[in-house]
Length: 577
Image (cartoon, rainbow, N blue to C red):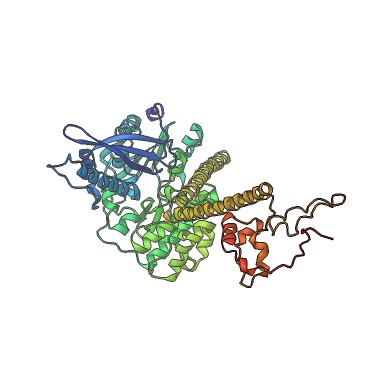
């Protein structure tokens, strides 16, 4: 087959679900316009960033293209006069930054090709529609019974997956859908095993799996054909959308938000859980459950896109469950994604954020119980229940399913082993990504806490306390040094440190000498006990050495009248005998 002979060259296996963030770093005014220098980053790694330069006209062009989504996006208005003023440019830069924040945090907009090309032109400049047409044309050379009716432009959310409406030449009224998809970053199967498993998909028969009419693959992509369903998917039912419309138009801004009836929620939920259990028991990795991958056939839900995990494509909800380290297996991923799907069926829209702190009123508390077990803070922190556990919960346990089709999907033992190894590799990459996100979150939280206003105030108070403590210690040290130098230099001992008077020298053998002059008067502190007035209180720090100020104060306050009159016998007069 010609399709099998020519793989596309220059593959870049990029994970398109990794969020892009954009920050305007500066602006520069030229002669007639202003350019904005934007730093774009993929994921959490600062090293994985680059600069782009955009004018206001580029933003305006992007915004016009996104109008199909029906959203009111906050692009700053045009201004013809005064648009080169410095104040105006600064204000416009703030408005453009807010615009970038809105489109990069909207789950659907951030994953669309228009936004990716605007922020990352190097990795998204390829025309995948043209590549898909080339691959399909090669396929038709060896399969002349198929014919393209029209391309179904942008009906899906994936950038590297394209759809075409088909027909069989001898059955012109019958419509089919051909899907072509590129390889993804989680493709771990060998080329041989990959092609064998893709060709095995048409043999899969299950009442809740949408049948594959034809499937083939080469080393770089896969092509599958299914019957076209006029009613569309479960998401089309919830949003009351037309299946052929572009993804942005169908699901970004629904005209009416309304959930399904309780019985529909119970029946559809039970059918989806049954097929997930079937795939888990078979060891077939899925990981791609969302409302657009569930086809409605009457009152029966049928799962789509089993080939995604074989191609290594990232999940629609990957940016959600990669935040939670306990959702680390494809089985737990399926259960978490089921929670998203159940929320949409119940409330007619996706949750604003995950985890969900509180749930709006639901048709039944049994619905809320399942939602809490899959989307709540506790569930995301502690881990997901199994599919079998969900089937036993009151919302689904009493649902009776009537079907005559016998499930059948025979996978050779060798391919089962290849699937098991590929599944482990997919989960290993997920765990590693979750670990990096967790470490980054902890670091960011610590930096944010350290730089917060409250934390800065605490650090200032502690610094002032430390400074005061240091000043007091320095003062005490200085006082002690002064006291020691005073004791050793003056010859007069402090009454507090040396309470006893000095012993007079011996006078033996020198009695004829006049007595030595009286010692200098002691400090006033030693005279205070005999005073009739209250003694002056010394400050606490004087206990280890009298301060200079206290000593001078005592000398100045000395009163001679408080001394007792002493009686002396004067023998110095000469004796006349």
